[in-house]
Image 1 (tube, helix red, strand yellow):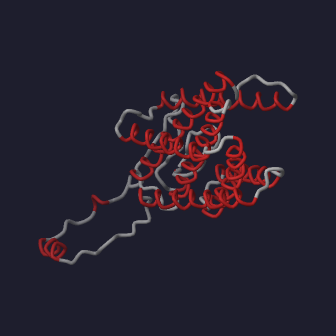
Image 2: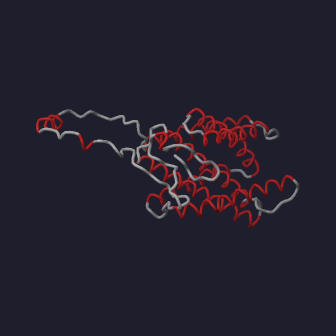
Image 3: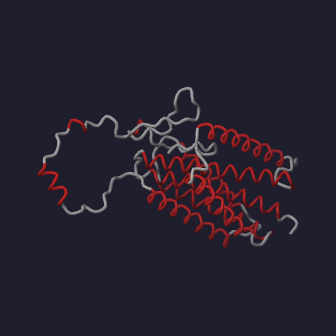
Amino acid sequence: MRSRNPVFSREGSFTRNDQYAGFGTQTAGQPGQQAYGSPYAGQPYADQPPLTDEQLAGMYNAPSAGPVQTGRMTMDDVVARTAMTLLTLVAFGAVAWFTVPMDNFAPAIGAALVAMVIGFVISFKRSVNPGLILAYAALEGFFLGAISKAFETLWPGIAIQAVLGTSAVFAATLFAYKSGRIRVTPRYTRIGISIAIGFVLLMMVNMVAMMFGADFGLRSGPLGILVGLVGIALGAFFLTLDYAEIEEGIRMGAPEKEAWRAAFGLTLSLVWIYMEMLRLIAILRGDD
């Protein structure tokens, strides 16, 4: 399930090399537009002999076969895998909350760096590895638990506010997408990714500048509030891309294991939104 998320791209799934639906290939001359193909194309169903009246009657009178295991991804699969991933993230976040001291963030920073490496491995790996995805969730959760505790020490109640804010963005984005208010078109994707790339580059320049004692004010004051709102909006944009990829994957008969890749994409987007929400609320509560 190739997401167009500029930070992590789930590369290599649903490709024709894997004999699946053909996701991730682009139509020539139209950047960002996906070319989709049917996984059932070329099947010689037309050459099958028609069923007789007796065969049809027997099929009609036969007992129900019960649930059919097709091996294809369903929405239930995506929900279940996403729940497992997020529960792992929350569980390890709780471990960090109660074990990482405020005067030693080395374990949390180390977990974040390893999680980033694993995230890139997952993104560029053609096959889906549930163990790697859960390992990413555990390490990222450990980092988030530690950083959330630090923010909570300075601004009591900020962690639950960030969680509620993230949940609100997720629900609002899902509603807007399912109701048709947001349509993931090639133009929408190109514009969103262009903004996202600019945002990421700006944040990287700001981070390097801060290492040398400079401060552009991107994480404080009115400008910091604007940057925080843009960051949250980009997180919502990433979610809409994930929704579109999941919906297309189900419609095109993606293999069941791809539900793990969908869970990974949703987790990435939610982590992004949560971090931006923490920063924004911290700026708004800076005078508390």
